Structures are given as structure tokens and as C-alpha cells.
Image 1 (tube, rainbow, N blue to C red):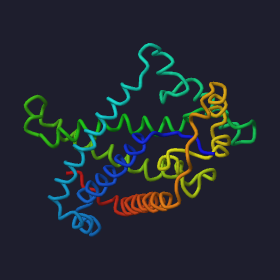
Image 2: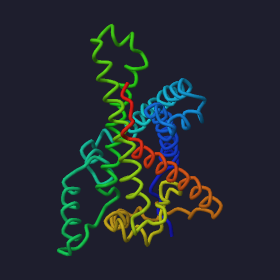
Image 3: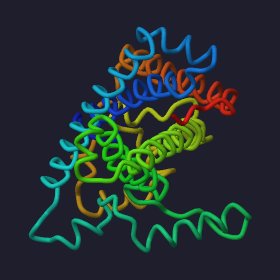
Image 4: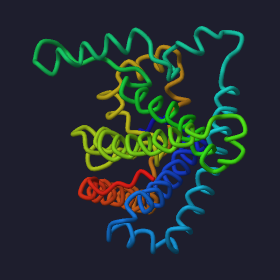
Length: 272
């Protein structure tokens, strides 16, 4: 028995974000490390230094458009007649006091001093993942647009603001890449409870046994509210699992390749 966690829109948007992020990482790193042999090799895959810049800017615009679509989607999901429950209830991604309590319980459990927390629909680390990306997007978008349109920016802001924008853009990009390719990949796919891959974002659902182990409070709430039967879903077909395993581990391998080479060549980062 499978329980549905993510809609088709959620899953398509996740794939969209994955692809645009990987393109941005590859084209951004090719320019960031252009003084190295690896940077030159990477940039050649996209047609050279200038071509990388063009692809990076266009992919950034597409990513920004997707982010705006996501904002609109979120607004349509809010129950305006019961705003408090909609924003701070168990189905919301906004952190609350339960998350603080769960972190404390997890800490005690780690040291053998208590039982693990009974998680609801969203775990505290999932909320952190979401908001880390959410708040990084406006900073990358704002600084990126300033660099794309420097003359327009200079009409309203001092020239030195472009240097600050370039520094912030690169720093946030490196932070995002490091976080995604280390923390997110490990939490998402390499934890003992989900190794070798957390399939839920691709398949849309997870087995009831897995849900009971990881999110018992969520399953109990669905039963209490009489929604468990409506939340059932069919398990993914074998061919579909093969496709998203190949795609997922391809993305994972590419991300680790970028991360390892980024660390190796980090002394040669160009900030101009």
C-alpha cells in the first residue's frame, strides 16, 4: 500500500528546479574556475566562456520565472478563511514549536536518552531544506539581475553596488551548491532509512510501512481524519523506477563531480 505525498505539480517542479540548478552550477562554475584547466574543459562543453554566460543568464531567467509560478501556486493553496491553520497547521511548511520539540527529541534520542520524535507530514529538516532554497532564490535573482543589467542598475545605485552584487551572487551560489550537494543529497538519499534513494519525490508516494516508520504522526492523523483511504496511491511501475533511479543518480554523480572539483580548485576561484 502506497500513500501519496506529492502531486504531479510538486514533482514536475522539483525536476525543473533540479535541471535549472545543475545547469546554473555547471555554467557558473565554468566561469568561476575559468583560469583552471578544469574550468576551461567545463566551459567548452557549453561552447566557451561567453556561451556559458549566455546560457547561465537565460537559465537564471527561466529559474526565476519558475520561482514566481511557485509563489502563485502557494497563494492558491492558502485557505484564506482559516489562515492560522493554513499557515501553521501540520500541512504547512512554516516552522513551528513542534519542530523545535522534534529537534530536541532527536538530539536526546541520538545520545540514547529518549525515543525519536513522531513526525507529521513535514520533518524539520524538510522545512529547512525548503526555506534554504526559498530565501536563496531572491538573493540570487536580485544580484543576478543587477549584473545582467549593470547600466540600468547604475542609474539608481552607486557603481560599487555592482561589486557587492557580484560578490554576494558568487558567495550565495557556492553556499547553495555546497549545501545541496552535501547536506541535501545525504539527507535525501543516503540516510539509512531511505538508502539507496528516497523515491518519494519521483514516485509521488511511499510505502505505508515506510510512512509508519518515518512519519507515524502523519499516518495517525490521516486515519483520524478519515483521509488515509483517499491518500492511497499505486506503487510506481518497474520501468518508471528504473528511469528515475538512472536520472536521480546521474544528477547525484554530476553534483558530486562538481563539488569535488570545486573543492580541489577552490584556491583558484576568480572573483572578477
